[in-house]
Amino acid sequence: MKIIDNITVYDEITLIGISNTSADIEHIARVFNMFAEADINVDMISQLPPGGANSGFSFTVGDSDFVKVLAICAELRKLNSEIKISVSSGNTKISVSGEAMRDLSGVAAKIFTAAAKANADVRMITTSETDVSLLVVSTDSESVVKSIENAFSE
Image 1: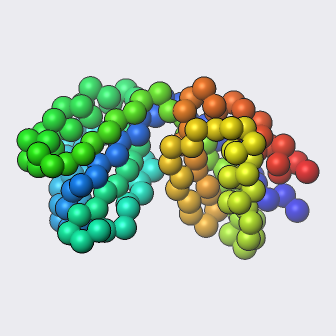
Image 2: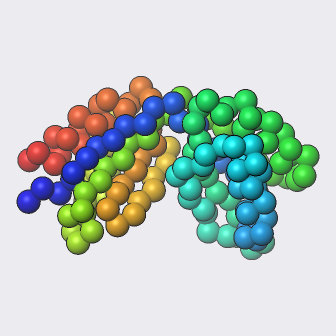
């Protein structure tokens, strides 16, 4: 049975991490609206569990929006001096997809094991029923793709 249908690679991805910020969904919406108003397409989104009134989240954008991202981050710091923001460009998103993934257990484990065998620096993971996406440093992308291909060809 064919488990994965595609491995898609997206280069030039920036990871943004925001922590020590309000867990209130209205606040989170305001942050993402700032990026929308700047015409920045946001991709992989992951929220940390709230710790009291504070939380954190990470998301990705294209490296081409790096300068606009820095301007928004400066605005966010003006609004909340306690906020912590990290910005890391030069990453690659690897999306592994397949309809058969919907009903199989262990697919994510196999992908993570393949990334570990490639000694990858995995920065972020997001999933859906039919997709597992890894954000890795760009220098690791080729070896991760080969390792995933090998894992699913066995």
